[in-house]
Amino acid sequence: MNKLASKKILAVTIVAMMIILFVYLDQNFRDKVLPSNVVSRNDPFVKEYSLPPGSAPNGLVVDKSGLVWVTSKNATLYSVDPRSGQVNRYEIKSGTASYENPGTTSAMVWAIVQGGDGKIWFSPLGTKTIWRFDPSRDIFDSYLSETGAPFQMKDAMDGKIWFTTLRGDTVGVIEKSQNDTYSVSTFDTLPHANPAGIFLQNDSVWVANVGSQNIFQYKIDQSNYTTKDISVIREIPPDNNTLFSSPTDLFVDKNILWLTEHGTSFLTSYDLDSGKITRYPTSQNTFGTTTLPFWIRGIYDPKILWFNEHQGNKIGRFDVYNKTLTEYSIPSLPKDGYLTYPLNISQDPMDEKILWFSEWNTDKIGVINGHVTIPFTINLNTTEMTLRYHDANVVDLKITGDTHSSDRIFLNASSSITPTAELGNLTVGFSSNVVTLPHDNIIHLSIRNDGVAPGNYTVGISASDGLVTTTKFFGLSIPLT
Image (tube, rainbow, N blue to C red):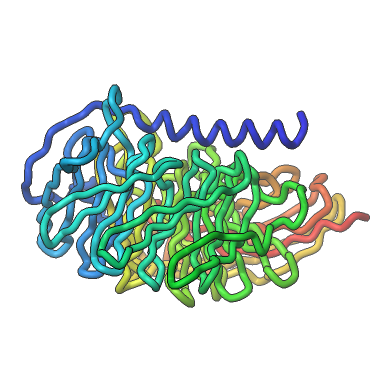
């Protein structure tokens, strides 16, 4: 199978997944106090709130006042006040446009953002309308997007709102005119690029293309504060080689491009100066699935980056300074399955350690308090290792912490050797993979190369109590000879 055919299959797979997620039955819900979900465990990190049955929440955003705005598939926008638990319901309608396409039973919102003026912007996938809600007047209005609904939206410092259209192969911008109206402009990307994630930096727009498997940086060409065009000034990789696997979202921090590779279990960094790639695998999960990292969230000059795992039952928090991954388990599971789908995330704009997420197939939203101290730590005695064929080595690791809700800590290993974060031909064994706290003894980790292909990889060693997982990494070099 040639590369072009492979790319087309991946693009079709992603789009097909989006279409499948539209299917849910409609339910009605009236204003009431949103009850906190009662879970069967004492979780100091994650709090969940129940939404109406069948709401299938997806897009959500935390506004500057702390309210959480949540979209559902039943043509309803909700606002949630975390301080009081109060939820308000707003039926999405206007006198000029239909919210849903004729013949459809629901519309899923992926993109939602708060503009600089406090208005809430969102768009139902499968339509050609972008909606705006004015919270001060409880009024909706809508605008035409010729190339389709946004898949992700970001607000710029100058008041513009930029977006991607996954199916339309365009990058777009919403701009306010002098007469207080808005115009929507779109600009073509490559055919079958399937642009997804978007990141704004000064006078440029970075875009992650799922279909064409690459990253574009566009220069914004403006005249009198109006966008005239965009032009490609950087393409990663700089040729037609395949370097990434379904890059879905991205974040640029100084000279490092961070991205999620949705076809894998990796959070990936790319050095814009040297071209060096480092892939950080998520921890292994008990049901053996690829975790599929999706969106990335972070503030300017971030200390941490958040990402959601579509098939990991976890939300990830990555410390960009000490390269430590913390994963928070989602308490709830759907009634008819074992995987909860956290399709969207939103960072609190006032606090980078607070993250909200939607649970599409449990009809809940949740919030993670990243200020809560992890009650145990894991430390490794190495950061780099070289293994030739049939070579073996030992890593010493130490788990420290006090007894808490669970005094048993479980250990596992993951790697960037395979896209699923499994170990492939790397044989790893713990002297004990269960630790009882408090624990002062050293755990020995034996590691052997039984035929790993030459290259540079990352190995993650994880410790988990079931509620939270901490992973430390070391680099693994496999030489040619």
